[in-house]
Image: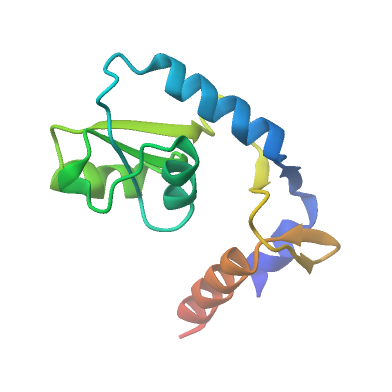
Length: 134
């Protein structure tokens, strides 16, 4: 539970649908090939790929793999499996929302220490706290 207590000072960045659509349009405008196909990393990446209108059912079918938020660990894991694919992310916390907890519009928020956090992340933090205890 220590990790949840640390969340008191976290700033929440509630992303709007308008922001998502602007980023998706920017992504689509940057595509060089009109035959591009996009696979979303399971979870929020699937939402992004679906919103592009260029989604495919498997990473093998795609030339681009997308996710909502750049996460180095996830990126490296996928890059090892599919090194020849191009990767795109709606948000890269190295450049934006660096100190923020991002809540996407399709995520249901749960209050933790007065902050709205996605239940998915709350469970991850609780699980990590339990691992540390044991």
